[in-house]
Image (cartoon, rainbow, N blue to C red; front, side, top):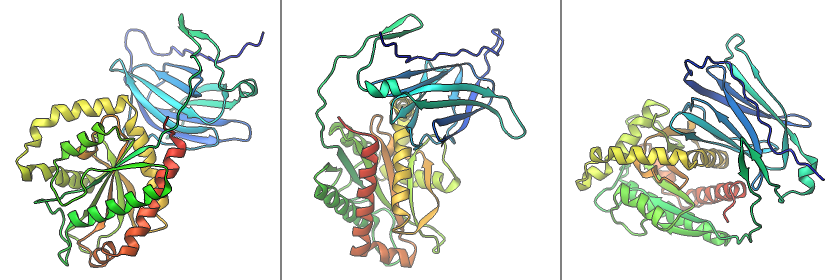
Length: 388
């Protein structure tokens, strides 16, 4: 009888039972070797952990006791075997990290390196191809861990569907957004680019597309999020154009949601965009508890992880087509990105306060070029995160 080793469990109990240390994930990295892939976690203290492999889909699960994820450790990855890295809190104090794997693997080696010079504790996981699992890939076997039965799931028919992309043109109606030196209004630019992206996506025949607004009308930030959730969007792209007191500043940037902004400018931009609803008499301060709850929910559903991965894909596709800001993938607390179960990004097309960029953003050629680049990024994203 063929025995498939699916679970490899290791407990490292080095912390006294009288006190569990609060542990931070500082950063992580991945690497491909000749016959295996390596995943390394930089951790603030000696970890207590449990690691196991699951199938259908194939993934490696890392459970860490009394651990939290540091916001600066951006969850994205792409190696020969590791498709993506995501995480979620457990029980309010533990952390689960999931490595989505491209092919069946087994755990070759797991070990902890002690602090060395500037290096903290490091949890190292080596994964190698599992030939036995490759032979019967897709046929999981019953197994158990810590007394819990994991029954083999029944085969199910997978019916592919077209992902639904929600495109949000920023501002609108009595809210013009930023105004350029030649009086270009942000609300008009964002609507034109949203419609251009819609055309590009529909031309592929691969997607359904929904615009939060298709005319010059005002929509509250919370309503934009609710629209995306109501239509059950698979990806949310909010389109904006910025302004800056320094007229020389120019370049495109991509933002994802974080409770902590990546820099002062990101925080200031989020604060400015979040004031949009105040124009319509909505007191955003009254919604803090709701937003906090959504942020927690977002982490639990892994959407921040997927959003960060898509943002990196966007930057990769756009950097050859237009000028980008330094560190173009940034983080801030944009309220329009708080859709709890929809990966979301905010694209700042450029700065209307810069004379050259204002002219460029009004160019039909530039508009179509960026729309094609974003559409290609969406293609790449859904090759990694398939919709069923």
